Image (cartoon, rainbow, N blue to C red; front, side):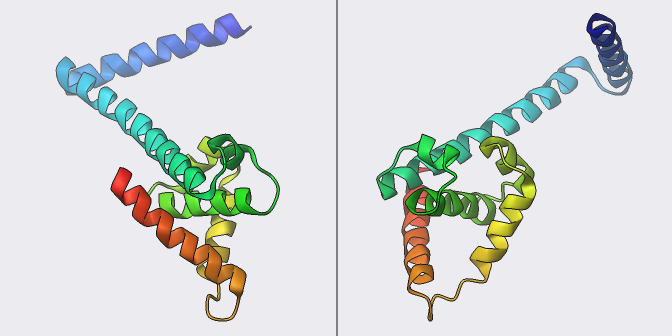
Length: 143
């Protein structure tokens, strides 16, 4: 059954390529495919470098940022990594969700919570914002 499905997908891909070749030369098609692949790799690479920088600043491992489900420094590092990726580098929530193995609504919820922090009244919010600003500067230097 899956062999038949794979065959159908391969035939569909070849038909799509054939149709694209009638509209543009082979080298342009190849350039577009390679640009798409590179853009995906670049986003993942940027996210990984952000996570590594934030983890190093907070004294934890990148794996702890990717896989943590508990509150505390690991969770704060994850939120900071997400916010830097979203706000500074414009990486969308779907890409981040795939990178972290989460659903996009987790990213949106964290963004809403981050945007509504009250740094003047809450000490924890102030500390998180200070760490965020410090990590933004570090990431900008390194990337």
